[in-house]
Image (tube, rainbow, N blue to C red; front, side):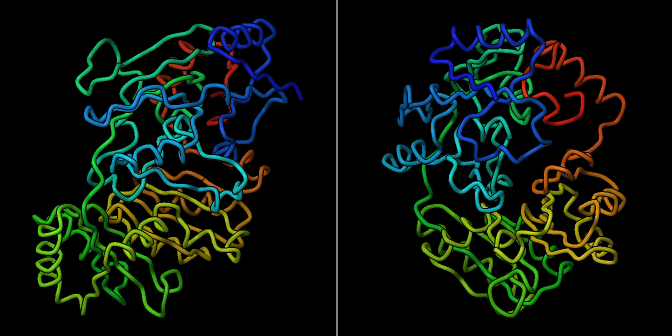
Length: 397
């Protein structure tokens, strides 16, 4: 294995230009915590980006932070904690899920994979907080996009293009993100014993209410702590407002059963667990394949019913039913055929599986011909020789 560790952007461009001349692909690596996402690497050559680390500029009063793309997420969060601020898109720590506990998640990896947690239903995805970047394309050309203000409209919005590209378009060296104040108080309403349909009704009513929920999730029986399923609804903000809104929400949802209200500490622990998909990361679930499925919330109960007819599946619903996590056991193809047959709209992504399975089934949702043609043209523009993370998303991408 050849490992490259460039010290600056000029050296990084040189490494990529050399790989381009030889047509030898490179696997991009920041902290390594997400190396198991996507299809297995198709090259023995590794490009480690650890030198591009450290917070460059942090202006709490402007709600903007710029850092090297390989800056550990823990370092970012520690700096934000000191100013009582946060990454509002609530990126998950999937090391327990992926078995990469010894690696360090980085801010660039989070943005490249567009990872967003439970607060996405209120604050948007990671890409919506991605303001600016510098990087080197698969052509070996350094470029920058965006800036340090929210209303930056200079040229194309390449930040949104890079978010979710899994390092297949460019090696990011520096990123700028929008940050927000941390809520003063958090309360969580817990409804016990609801089935998927009733849980969806409770979550939908909450999301359509005036109480500004920042989280709505459902843990079925067998996944939730305790003997009964748990439907959990989060409210955040100033203390008086939160207390009034959570009490009003409990009254409005009385027909779903007696509600329990969790305080700050218990709420933070619960939503951190959901953020990190910890209910499906237990040692007993390590042999299961993990899928992340985006559906219309109204379709989630029917989708789960169809899945459970043919598969041994454990599940968690997030985003008010719009995100379904599945842990599948016993299926030779990891459940790929049944999941995609049951999915009438939306998309399913294989998050965890052995390398052989990730190489043999489509990890990402198969693309319609028009979308496939467009994405191939984008890839041609940034990386015509498929040098960066070749085959990470699709066989040709």
